[in-house]
Length: 190
View: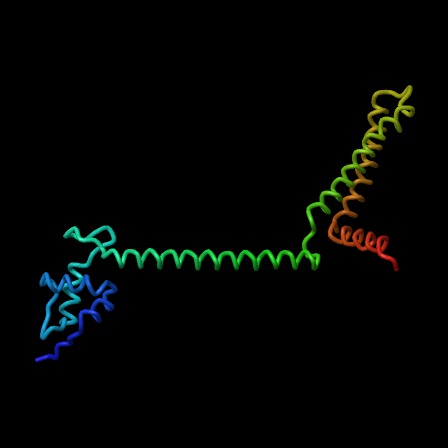
């Protein structure tokens, strides 16, 4: 005959993660098999699994013991708090990394880019607005097709100048860095 493993009510309560009082009530109701004042481990596990209370109540209408519910809620709060702390630590690390990269000049501040764009737009605007004054005297007495041809030439010259300007601004990061270094050189005594 196989040997039967017997355990106390407290050990069984720890095994199935409920209160000892809840197990004691199940024993008193005769729902868990006993032998010599101890619970028969494997038979009791099988019986308990059939009775096992669910989160919203068991088939018999019994719910999880109140102590167990409070313990679970506290554990859930602890896990949530740990997750929040871990997320905050990750965010802080990323923020410090970005600040370091900015200090190392791997990133350019938006204000610096905005200043460079404003400068480029200002140059384009002034070149385009200067065309009418420059060409007004030259167009006096010209035929329609000659005016059109001169306008095309001047606009093409203007766009070539602007293309050269765009090439100059392709290395925006280097331009900003050079300007910052120049500004530091002016403000700091050598």
